[in-house]
Image 1 (cartoon, rainbow, N blue to C red):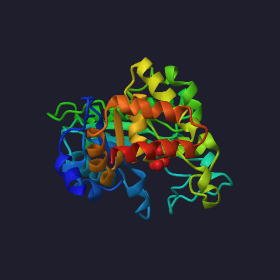
Image 2: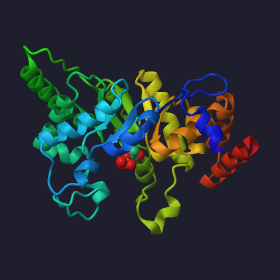
Image 3: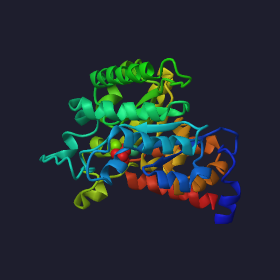
Image 4: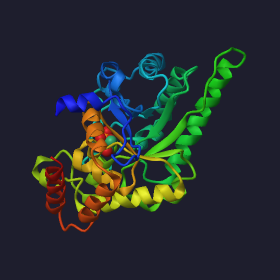
Length: 328
Ligand code: PEP
Ligand code: MG
């Protein structure tokens, strides 16, 4: 099978009945991106900027960040690269910025922390913009959005940084393109705010890892409740289905960048729901590309219909496994 997978992996991904599905890569290190540069599919759907922050002993300076981001943007200069602003807190502590809280997952993380520290946010945004000068493939994404006000506030700071950098390069032959702005959909409140949020963003990206955690009230890293943490829970699947329908209605492009997008059963279900952009770890791209070429959109809708009426995640898995077995 792996030979068959490799033979097909460079072709653009489409279903057996001709529906194009864009596949993107999730990454956090420039080395990782360089390693897979030829096989990052249609671009980078999620670059986790907190990873280089976590590997250092202090906050990287603006100039250091410019270098990191420039390397990433240059690794695939013709493809879109979605950089998520710092998503620390929760399960991703910074050794040099300790946060002690009783409920870190419900606490000071992601956009909450960076909006409280606009100097950290502005340095990062300026570094991303500077790194993108002359390139034009940067997209920005905000993590842990739970209300419209956070997006408005972040947009204001991004505009400020954009004008600062534009001013600096005025009169030179350098060009700065305004990056597209997107938000992660991973806090359940946003499910009820999509029409409003759609007015402020260019794209959505579903963080199914955190969405599962918050929808099911199950800590994603607590082994004691690990059996309850499952993105195939019928309620999570319904939420994912609802999101794509709302996003399509609002005409806002939507990607899934949580783990479920890189899993065979998950990718097929998401396709059936109407998702056309999936972002996953590099090592899953070839496999999912191959799988999707061997599945029709009609089949994926059939599987989805069974999954959506299932009573439990075990039922969902039974349907998926039967389907995959029939496929061989
Ligand atoms: C997610 O929450 O699904 C996601 C992609 O982000 P992270 O796993 O980095 O929280
Ligand atoms: Mg997340």
